[in-house]
Image 1 (cartoon, one colour):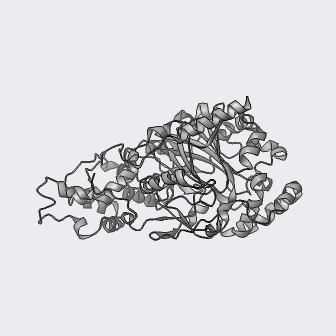
Image 2: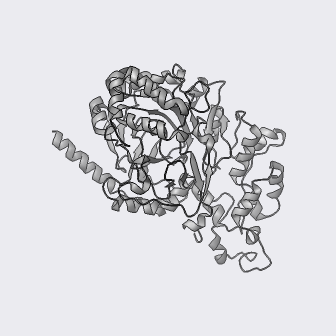
Image 3: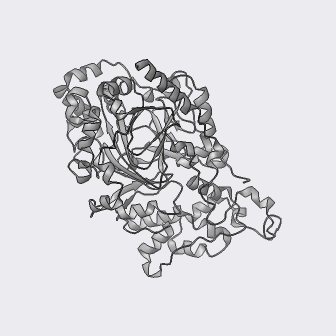
Length: 550
């Protein structure tokens, strides 16, 4: 029977491999550009007598690049932008970029929670700061604006979601029904070998799965508090009330990299939302039951005490096409992610194998990569597809879709990108130290203290300079056998933190274009555990990301 079941599993896995998504599958955009922009090359096919061959018609982007003009507009106040959009067709388009109005809102709010959101960031700005003048903004399509830059931004906001991604059959990560996943099976076949797995239906029995489908329920039990949301492209993080963030998710004009609610305090032990999932988690997934720590060796940072350990549990909420660009989870920890509402597409790259377009420094402290999910899909999907077919064993990327009620195990050191597929997506994620990654966590805390995250901005937490010593001393007192076993490892047991140039013959990639920019706050703002450093291409056209004719 076991042999038959293994054979069926293998056939199912091969079936999933046959589903291939092509770059053009993302090009059937969800909507046309709201202001009528067309790719730059289309101006030569235009029948509009005022453009193309008419030498008297000069657009601002004929004099300066779109990128330069966009940068200048970033210094404008709301009043300045309001005047600029009235000057010509080009500035009508450029001045309505949602990123400009988003940054104006975030700077004016100054950390105060956003309690009102409109259908666009411009609407939100006027509602918050000039309510007496508010009239809903309705985009007006205009003719004669041709720009690869602005069309590209819109494409990254509205790329098509392949239909195959919405099916569990399109993926290569193991999927195990929760009733078939025992503690021994999970530890021996997935956690110890450091392999991702989807545990199907593991969260279906949780109260959170039943109750959180109704936004009113969550709002009722979070009255009086706000939630932190961030984006790799936003100038600042944002605090939202939950009703305001839900309205934001419904917006028809989201920015290229939408703000992603990633809150570390919403699920604190004893809170109402925590009670909605933790007792049920302990029953459906006993291998993640902290009360069985002496048996499973799970969540060993718990020995430091709740307030003193690094951040570890987050409530995640995001709109369609939001998500996390490629990153490795912090402090060499494993993670699990439970999908409560909506579907997620995951792309995994094994430890030590940098995804295409992702360029980590040798010490891992800096990473250059596209700043939005859409940008990566358009730029690097071809190379990703090739790697799935040609990469040697152990370096092949994996993909999967988690459905509502699924829980995915994310092993330490794996690069992963996540795309939210539905209009509203809610998940819980938890990072932890187990016996299997204890040695690497200790080495990380000892040798990469400048990269340790989740404990700098809380007064009660153990700081990075003391974390290794205190964690080791506490483990020596409570779990000396596990600590002794971990101490026998002479080096990293995971390729993620070895020199990129020495991992199985992989050559280090040096970014040719891109400006490294340190995101110091992202290490400890409690809203985000993505890479601490990200970079955006200096000139995206140099990377072959072009829409000259469409």
